[in-house]
Length: 318
Figure 1 (cartoon, rainbow, N blue to C red):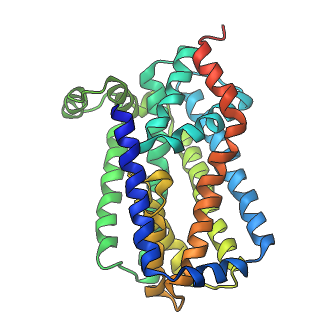
Figure 2 (spheres, rainbow, N blue to C red; figure 1 turned 90 degrees about the vertical axis):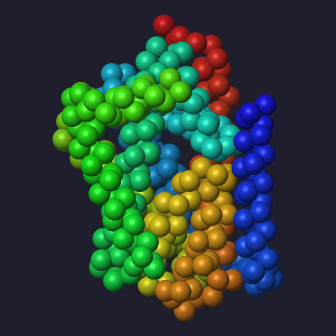
């Protein structure tokens, strides 16, 4: 019942945001731009999306899981990542991530704390890369986003402090006390794993993971560039290194399906401020970007979801 309510709320928020966006933008203009888009750059964007969001993401998560004590073949890691993607996309508020945790527990008896921790580590690294993009881009291009850059700088400092806390073999007592107050055992265990990263990851390991995250998130910037190019548009560099990462970052807030509505709304609001392109011309590329970077990997995962679900339900493979 609770999941149905969350699903309804998420769907309603997505619909409302899209309604508000199209209410301000002439759909005929958007369709005109869509009809004139070139297909070759869009195909290249799809290939990059599959490479980064599917192949590289699976390699990154395989690396994380291995350091947490479970050696998986790339084939099985890819199956888990792809098979769980539609569930993660369909279920609201990222609750579908639990399917990976359940799979690892039932098939390989990996402790729930470590399985959940692997997902938290993955999300943490993605966030820190976007924060770095935004802060460095804001400094280089002298963009403050009406003061948001300063807040993001503070957020980056907080993230670094969290990382320093997590690098300790034993978290500080107040950290452990706060974690133990959480009512959700799975999340509590995941945070305990996260805050003892030093037990599992060396400085070199963390460097490798940051490199993986940099490549994956840079792929998003490249796909957006290709999509923009397919529409015959040109944007200044600050859009790719500040506005787009900012838009992607806020769209990770799990209140809509795949961040749809939040991402498009922020792009059509901010890009015209820092370029000569109107919001109506931006909406088409923004929608295609969501399709290529988020919906396409989720739909591709349907080819593996059946096998993944059977493996999750059947339990141990030993």
